[in-house]
Image (tube, rainbow, N blue to C red; front, side, top):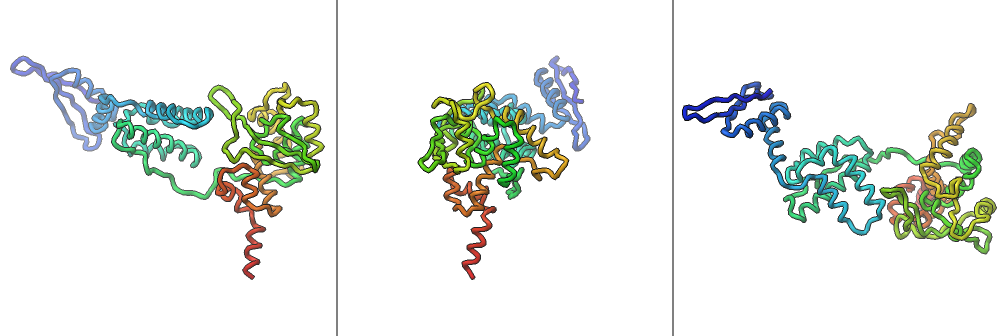
Length: 369
């Protein structure tokens, strides 16, 4: 531990000598001060940093800095972003709170070093995509700090994780028979919802935001769904807003075989009432549906004495993946699938489902002879 030795000079003044042992060389070192508070500060910094003078000096420089802390720079950047949904801003704040602030938040932004950012980045125990999103938020915040002349450079720029083609979780694609078994197993009040997800490919927040007037019967007997809004998670619950992107505003036709079930679901509903509700007539939140209805059905199906229905338990979102797989198996072109799913870019559709288009690939090979 560092200590202070007080010595009186011949002129009557006092010298305050800080003594410590260097952790690398194991040699004793010292530094003298006329100001006792400066000596006390060095002693405390040395004791807090393993007797390393270099680390103690860094800590002292951090303390002297008048620049805003990293947490404040990121928070101000989030507050200043325009053109985003409240739910997106809420998610950014959660990323700051849970992943950036604990490790980097207290560092003055002008004292943040690239080595610190790299160590933080490599130490995050999250999925690759989540880590990329968190780093992107920090880097964008530092770019704002550069523009505001708080720092000279963005020390997070250019830091990337290893590229990987491995998903953290592969989608589960169900057969039509598996969807029917699932619909027959779940609480009967939500059997139509299960079939509707698989038949429409709508996102959960889109399907549960549908009103009676958004579902209309076509002349040919099928129902047509007009997707114009979706539930979005915000800081204090949920709110209704537009769908995920401009191309998510779309019209989706349902197969005629689903008409009787949808007709029964719509029976007695006023035009502005939600098509899919909880048992009290309120919005059917994803966490409630998953916990109270979906997971018990999974437990029943996976725990059967006979052969399990699924090799891996699907999630509600896997019914959207399932819908896409059915379209691909039927030979529907990927651009049509893109429009039906409401993907903003065809690259999303190709990247997620392109590997399933085996039939199209085989047909292309056959054309070559």
